[in-house]
Image (cartoon, rainbow, N blue to C red; front, side, top):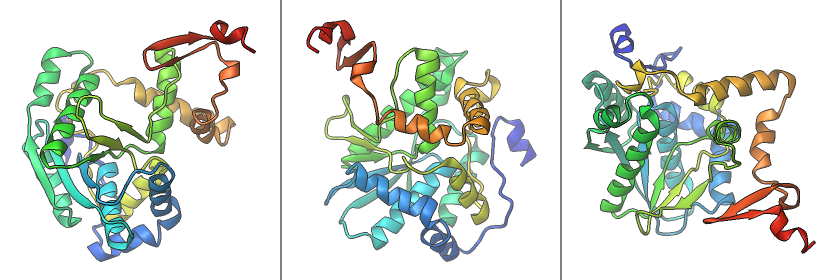
Length: 288
């Protein structure tokens, strides 16, 4: 594994050996019922992510989040009352062959029937955005996933963003972009008609995903990018560390950040934007 790490592949090595698949699947609705399974179902219900007859493309990157999401969807299909179809899709943006083999092996072990499609996104991102390729890479990967989902006749694309991704995005926007925007639990694609993006792990904290992954003996990919491994670390990791430090003095600061996007008071902010229109508090000041 040291050779892979030397090639820019950050792999989370589990503490335990692999467990039998049935035991892993059982742990989702037993051991991790409160912190994973219940929160997965709650997010889907709260934000009305799935409707009868949906065909959902579940995007698998090989990382801990997307592999757990795939298993959660399989359990929901097995135990849920709603009728829907699943397609498990994997975009290969230019993985090292050893990394690709590891991802395929993980999916076989977890009984996730993946469909892989190839691209050269890593190489293109490195060429057109040499210093900071992560943003353009993520954007290109998202577009490729939308396109593949549409080809397969899906009307939903599920991504594995979790609770920590949501609050980190909120803080990134406040501290670096100078705006208040969060990561929405679902949104309609503007470029791919008829496709809706959903984030069913919206309520699940990353630490429980890590616990599940390690206790199950899964070796997930973190990023596996041959390009970003050579670049300067991105701001998201700085925000992650900042929130961790804040929690030492403010116990539930992460939950407060999350709730802040649910409790926006338009009477107490300087301005906001709806679609393309920007509105100042002065525009409505005399109406009060």
